[in-house]
Length: 249
Image 1 (cartoon, rainbow, N blue to C red):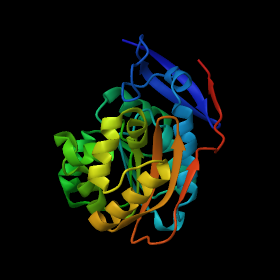
Image 2: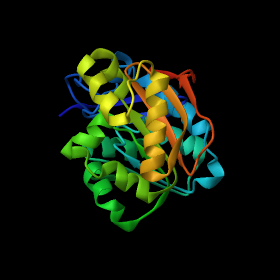
Image 3: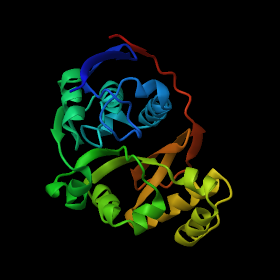
Image 4: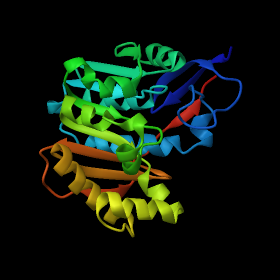
């Protein structure tokens, strides 16, 4: 058994109900307060805040958050959008217990986000679906059986907005074979991030009728905001929103 910890995120006290003794190796592991310092997760919070500010909060009454983790994104959604209904899902009981302790006003459930999305959310629809994938890439979306049907299920159930954490550019940057794979899957050889997101925008419009509104890049990943029917210009930015974080106990 781990220990109970508390930290403050942007002035709100958050709880980790069962922090593991060992630090997690990847961000998808059970909640660990020190991981927020060791890993650029605070940059992800910054990117999340930028995308949420680009949404029309008046159009977001219901939210389904996949891969909820320890609740940092949940807090930002609550503060910025103030949805009437907010469901948060994660496969880790420790993560869900932490979210319930930190943000009791949301509905947090232990669920397999991949399976639920593939099953079409049981026919339910939400104004906004947040998919904080740990290792999503567009190539994996097309080729990995684990991801088969997941994004299609998300797009079908989302009435207005979708956000997703996309790690594609990191792989393109590091490995030549990845770049070659992406050139084939998106129809162009991505030389800079703008090239990749231009192609991704075209693919998602054709595939599901969702256009990119804004991209906030950080470290090895990017947060992408998509809107149903959006045909305007989009921005690719670095994550710059300030985030306040400190460990309390």
